Image (cartoon, rainbow, N blue to C red; front, side, top):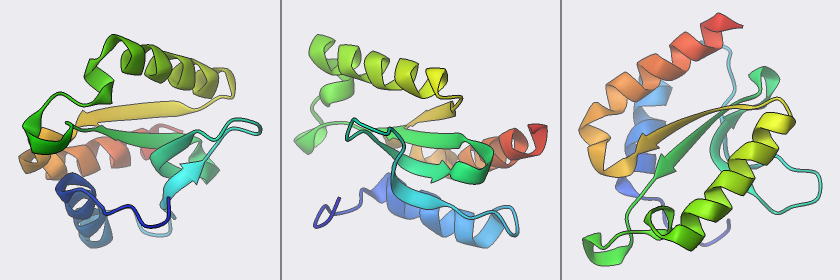
Length: 114
């Protein structure tokens, strides 16, 4: 999305990916994966059909849309559609950004599985 500021978790993930990510594997931020819906993954590795979603909180530390019933229902629809299209989706909680090295390790491990 144009004009949207990156979260601290997104900035941290991108930084660590640039330093430690899998060589030759291209990462795409805000990747639109669905042919008709406007859904996007936070990050995608399309050649491997692997995506990363960083589930965040709302402004001011309040629960974000992922934590509401409506938001969770929309997430389920998006993730189910992704699965039908053959995508694997890794989800991390953005408030745990101290774990960003582990996030990158998990992505590398998933990339090596296929």
